[in-house]
Image (cartoon, rainbow, N blue to C red; front, top):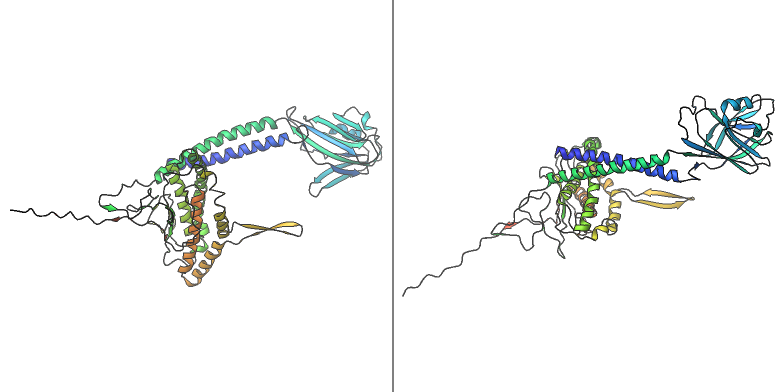
Length: 497
């Protein structure tokens, strides 16, 4: 692989994920800022009831609102009496509240539990009776009267306290409280995060596509010359070259009645497999998993770009095609080594290119022309029957049932996972991999990857509903065979008179 293209792909992936996260954070902040009452994020109303003269907010202690810029935000408090008393609510400096309630029995709210709601109080004893709260002049913001009372207070530096009382300063406070907050910086912050995120995302996507193009060019097979004189291609007309196909092999086009699918997955079962190595392969494939995370992100982005190219031009960009096929090939090799087949103990190569040296390979014929409109529906709508089957093969399907007043989900067991586990256990105790079981597993893998080829927009040919078992693709195209040279026409001898 080209180092420059790898670097572009890695940095493009990182920048794309960073940009997407920032843009998502900006969009979420904008939505949150637009919610609520006049931009306030408001909590549900909760009931509080104490027998003392006043209910106060928790003491700030060392967590004081200090060194905060002016107009950083606003606090909205609503109090509705749940008794026959008029209610008072106010905000004042903590020191003034302490002097006002000195020697007065009052209650301090210590903590709140949201779900389930539970308030924890601390009762502060006293024998005195307070003066009417509305007669005090130290309140930064206050409201009193019947029904629901509301105050809006701009957050400022200092140590503040919130006090809720009966308006006539009588004991026994019973109210429903609701709090809301509005931050003035959320709007500009949301716009800034959104624009910065989109800019970084755009740069990341461009770098990702450029990296994929570079890797695809490095993976492209060499162009094959046409048939030499005296070489026949059988009864079929050859299609485009197979990705990574050996010289002299023609890919048969899909004519009506032709059972050849233009994607060929192969896997050769190695002899003498280790009895226990499969127990640790999940650790051994970790480097491949890390690399494939970046490759599959490039695959995802490249497939979207290719989809638009097919929609408007009817052609799949060659470099992106070779890159994406290479990612599928790499994934198949790792799967064949690991828990989709356990067919070999040879470590998969870190390569996108096709090679006869490794016992697992995937080849897809490049399409010279694709349907413009089919690209919009084949990857989801037309593929639904196959996707349901693949979900059963891979265990990604989930069933739901309604029981005891709630919906309960049940995952469908992975068929291929169960088969590979059976093969692994047999291998562990006997040292042999049953050929019939291997052929069945490879048939399921072949079905899965054919659907992946179709849904990844590589081809327009619909995958067959067929379990082609065995390590070799039974419907691979036939090799080009030399035709017998034509005999020269007989020349009659000249007659003499």
